[in-house]
Image 1: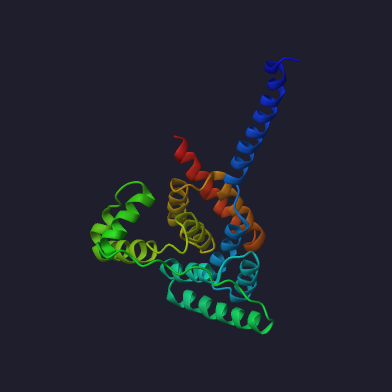
Image 2: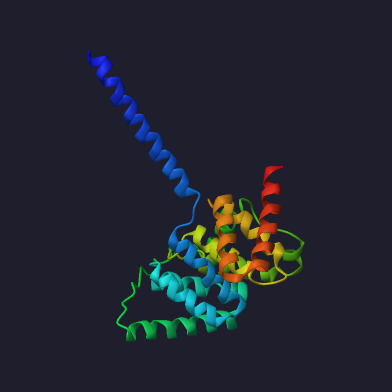
Length: 240
């Protein structure tokens, strides 16, 4: 066998491994990680105030190797979507979980702290930029004209002070937001908006369908069916 013929099988094998690696990467991209799946019930039960189920979800999240600071970041962020009372109750529940795990000798990873925020811009400037990147265009409308203070608070505090923090990436923040809104009645317009924002920032339809599956297992059929309907509406709008 000449050198050209002997090299041909090796080339085929190399291509097969290359295609297999690409296929595996695509599969991974279309599925949530264990840590991302763990964020979903934590956010959902924080939003609806079910502290018993939240306690179980927090333990599961730590067991899935979410760091303490990553979970804290989810709970803090959700005050902007579920209110301070629910966020504070969730943080108190997390403190109890941490104490109980410490008594059992479990040492959970604290994880990184948020990096210092650059000082060349203020929160409103950062927030305006972040919101525009998240949505894909500047956010304006009659509601913000009617109540400009809300527009400023959203930009400066939520998208500036909170979304500027790098403990969580934007995909994980949107997973938390979508899961929280899905478990609160009467906010489908916001749920629809954040599903679209999530996909604009790299979440795939398959990952959001997996989120709905986690909601079905953790929060029940009613919550999951509503989230599934909203997701179908978002996907139809994107395909037009």
